[in-house]
Image (cartoon, rainbow, N blue to C red):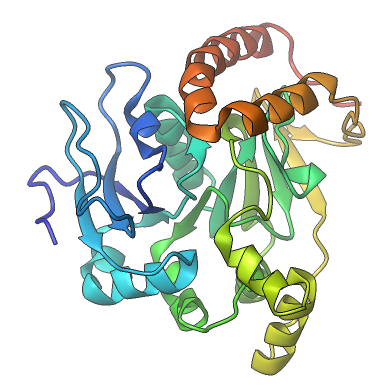
Length: 305
């Protein structure tokens, strides 16, 4: 494993990455200093993750293709991560996110002293839960659960989750296990709307799910059996509050729009042309749209009524 960069930063991103990983987009955007180090937990076949010109990151070869067992192996090798950083992000390798968005996300995590948070999903993303989609005009929403697609977790909380990471057959139990750890602390889990990522891969399309289906069970069945076997309680996923772009509490949130014609067309286009090819083209559009939306958000505060 490569040594950590001498200029250690405040925060850490650990990404489980294969050869088609999009983590190079994390460095895109402005030339502003980044507040985070990157460590790649590599499971590809090229021998090492591709270098990113002008940027430093560390990596380790942790085998397998499953996210959570691989992360467990990575953190077992480098337990100092829990001591050296207050907040650690563990995103999937199929998301587009820029340098400034990661900087903003970590800053919000620290400002609101969250136990954990997730970057919201841009409307052009493949998604599982409506509430994870970005809500324009908001800074963040408080929730009972977050999705571990692009999460930032306080290091001491993440360390407590490690025994569950190591268990075989874990599909989505991390959502519920994290909720259980902080359930008695109000406003400890947040969905960050000030920043968003694009999830470029179709939900449940990886080889992990193919192996589950080949055994004659649905992912939901496997998950239910896993949670029952290990005594993990199921929790309701819901919103419990919000903060607008000016830092004010929001009441009576408007229902999220379900008219998503353009995102659906983009999703079909990705299926035809391939995730990585399209993702590279979308990065430019993503950055331009975010800049425009952030400009208008500052001019038009979110309705509080």
